[in-house]
Amino acid sequence: MMKKICAMPHHSYGLVFSPDCPCFVLTLRITAKRSKVMSATHNARSRTEPGDEIHILDDTDGNFQTLIERVRFLEEKLIQISVEKKSLETCHSKLKDDNHHLMESIYSLEEQLTDVEVKSKETLAEEKKKFKHMLSRAESEKTEQMYISQRLQRIEKEYEQLKLENPKLRLEIDKLRDEKLDLQDKLADTQADYNTLHSEHEELKQKFEKERQCTGTLLDELGKELEELHKYKIDQELNQSHRPRNNSMADLPGRYQAFNSEVNRLKEENKQLQDMNEDLNAQLLTRCINEGKTLVNDTKEKSLATELEHLTKEELMARLQEVEIVNINFKSYVDKIILTILEKNPSLLEIRNR
Image (tube, rainbow, N blue to C red; front, side, top):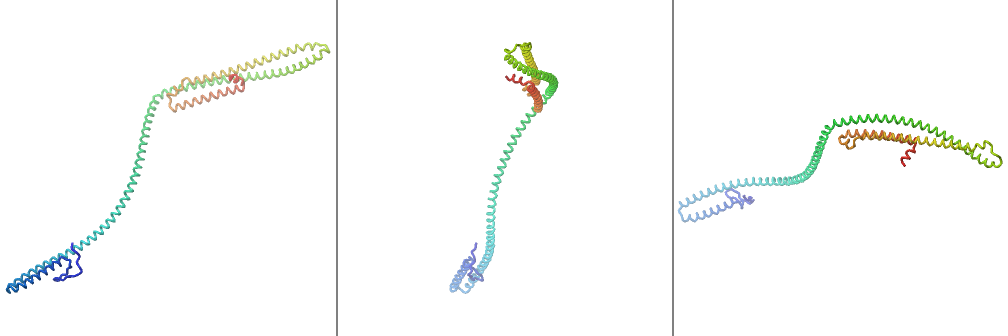
């Protein structure tokens, strides 16, 4: 690279050079050589002939002409180099500016890259979290799917078994339907017998009430007569010492004994009627209980485990509803019996509790 041309000019052969310029140094050297040549020529001029001096001068002029051409070539080369230097400096400044812009772009891109890295890390963390969530969800769905498939297989097996057991269950249902009809017939017969016994019991109760009322009235009258006789006997005992007995007074002990025997007879009849009423109530209760046991035993010919072993859920619910209906009917039947006993003769329940 050539140095910058100095502002101080140097004139040589119509050219302007800087003191630091190589051409300027070369020009000085040429001038020094020329002066040496001139001095040598001048010294030799005194020793040579005039013809020789002219020849030497011609050679010197030729050499100077060559040097001048060489200097001009170098000047042109120097100008070309200066132009190239300026263009290189221009390119260098442009490259420097470009480098500055590129560095700014690099800094900006580095910041963007940092932001992108941070965002990519955040995005990666979110994606990892989403992936873990999706993976756990997929595992749970897989487990649920396996459970559902196993349950479906069990249901299919149960369905096949139910298809095989369906004819048996239909036969069992028909049998139970027939048994139900039989039980309904038996229940109707039992209800008719109960109504008959109830009517008989009502008639006996009415008769017993009438007899009891009659007996009570008679006992009240006899009691009054006994009180009168007792008072009369006391009065007679008080007056016995003052006046003798007559025929009517002599009949009083016989009448008293007759009244006592009549009272005893009525008491015995009342007791017999009470015993008959208790026996009828006991027979009614025993018959009702036996009928209820018959209903229960007929509905329980098979064990509950045997019946439930081959039933589906729907059929089991239907059977349970039927059993509940039978239990409700039986409970209402027993409640009616107990209410009837409480109304008619509650002493039977007291005796059974004892």
